[in-house]
Amino acid sequence: MRNWFRVLKPGGHLIVTVPDEDLYEQGQFPSTYNADHKWTFTIFKSESWSEKLRNLTDLIAALGPAADVQKLHLLNATYRYGLPRFDQTLTPIGECGIEFIVRKRPQDEVAFGGRRPLPGNVPDAAFQMLTGIRRPARN
Image (cartoon, rainbow, N blue to C red; front, side):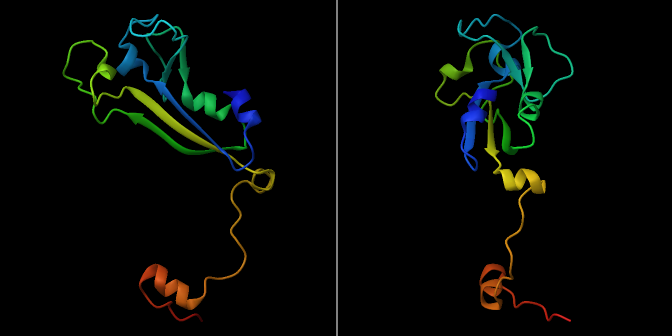
């Protein structure tokens, strides 16, 4: 992941989906559903049943100050927790993963410590169009 982020252009986005260790692997590793899996993933756990666990919060933090997390989401909206162990990704709606999106900050944002607001003010007409109210009087 570090190499993907290294070659990403500033302002670009790294979009990744990985299987969640509890929802996909379901307590067994090596994977019984995908022999190519080398690691298990979780958003964060202090302890795991897997010796090959990778916490995504740790992996993303290791990318350094240029990493701007846009999304980190457990894809479990259609997961059926009440079913016995089987590969739910074989169903038409089953998801058992984690999706994350990391934007690579340009160097000026890294130096500033975040996104710098654009200079100037929003004109009164644009303020009203965007908010639906007249701008309060300024003192």
